Amino acid sequence: MGWPRACLVSLFSGASTVAIACGLDAVGSVAPGGSGQDGSGQDGSGQDGSGQDGSGDGGVVDAQVSQPLEGGFAADAACNLAGPGQLIVSRVTAAPVVDGDLSDWSTCFTHLDSRTTGAHIRSFTDAGTFPSGDFALVHDGSSIYIAARVVGVLPLGDNGGPELYENDSIAIYIDANGSYSDLNNGYGPDATQIVIDHAGRVQGFRVTTQVATPNMNARTSALADGRSYTVEVRIDPATFGAAAFGATIGFDIAWNDGVGDSQVSEISWFKKCGASTGCGCSNGDDAPYCNSRQFGSAQLLP
Image (cartoon, rainbow, N blue to C red):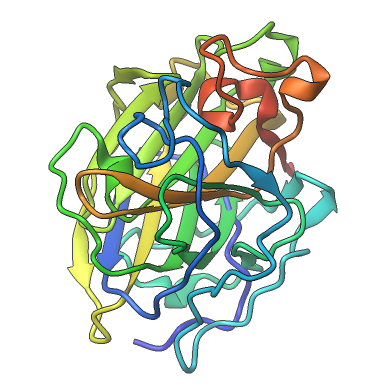
């Protein structure tokens, strides 16, 4: 399957479904040392907030970044942006088919790797590896659709859950009504982190607490190259306990590198604020997974 020449960043409305096609491409590397989502990494901690924090904003100069597939889609870090961390999401009349094949996505795709300006980077071991990829969102007035193509880092990991972030995976962060900015810290009742791994497994989190992700289904198909994987998601407001999405929602996305029993690194698209500005986490960590005020935003065009 050829990759569409577009930038991935689109949200749609409708019944919630997740479809994932899997495979891997090149290997990347990143500088060592910090916190991880569950605290299992060497040199650091994670979702419980203990240990050193090796996070950074804006990339790692000496990192080797996983490279796009030959013939891969063109992507642009500035695609559909109104400003730093602010996406503009087009409304579509014909939603893409959620099947893992991204050739029917014509919207712009946004590129994200460890060199992306404004990216929030955390490394939890001295392995120095980072995934890279592209993402897109669209919406149809009721549902949101998200597509991603990720170049992972071998091995991909085979943790059966719930710690799917210990595998190569993506994390999608959504605050359904955009009220994240009103919170002191943590997540509001309509905010959830959804982790989808390379094999199509899905797990929701609110900070460190596992939660269900209703109205979501996942499926996976391997790509011929054996190194990259695609993700397509269709979600309802009900997934987040809401009757409808707000005109502007809280949004973030991240690529996880994991080996199955530990999280190696994470690249988040955006981090709006942090501990230095009074926007850290109650568990002592400093990342979007534990405070939805750190999410970026996505404006759903009428």
